[in-house]
Image 1 (cartoon, rainbow, N blue to C red):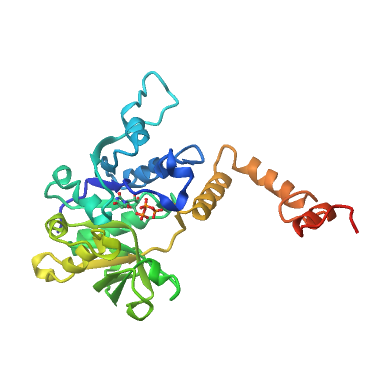
Image 2 (tube, rainbow, N blue to C red):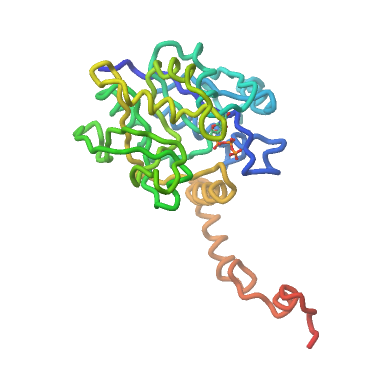
Length: 312
Ligand code: UTP
């Protein structure tokens, strides 16, 4: 039986270059998602699983993130979101995800912990993280989220050799695999399986010792994947091993603009206060001759082709 998981590390010190120029002044973790910043949706996901302690790894280049967590004054402003206990952990330079997680070592101590990448967003009704915690209670070691991807997409993620395991009720209908031979962003001939590692992890604190000794890998960054590959080598009877839980719910990659806008649209349309009104509004737009998808007017099509409206 493994220890209860009480805290989450949220690495948020990356540069967000895929979202430039938006992220030049506003960290992507603070982008609005319907009625709250993205990072609050991630925090709420963990709170639904009973986690109340958060270590947000941030960077000196992101003072807005520090301000968000330190200037909250719920009593004087009833509109403010109630904040849980959040420690801000500084990563002076963006040296990779593994390096970011390592910065939280003294805050976490010797207990198992969750890592949530805030640009990887799961729908609020998705029980993935709770299932990962339930699986971890049975397996110990480390548990990661998996998603089935196409062969073309596999090179963008981490890949692992997988072997199915039967965990009964703990798996809550999710596929669970034991992982081996984990590799970061494989070349086409190195892809191990159709499953890629996603941005949710339940980690054994011994991962810190491994991270401290992990040399820079792909992109010259210290990769969490490389440390997981080493952890997978530790025998299960010594508390080692890495397991993967397959995500079945809706997932958004909010680290790129398209994924962020999809999350914004889907969650806005589901909002109990104004979702119905928005759906009506969008139906109107789609039905209107000037709405999205409407055929270009002769003026637009002439201009689009470099022609002059009205010229013949
Ligand atoms: P990403 O590589 O997806 O995010 O890292 P990024 O670096 O911010 O984005 P791009 O690629 O430049 O657009 C995954 C998560 O790990 C954090 C990021 O903030 C993101 O939440 N991270 C990454 C760190 O905290 N520190 C790092 O050195 C690298």
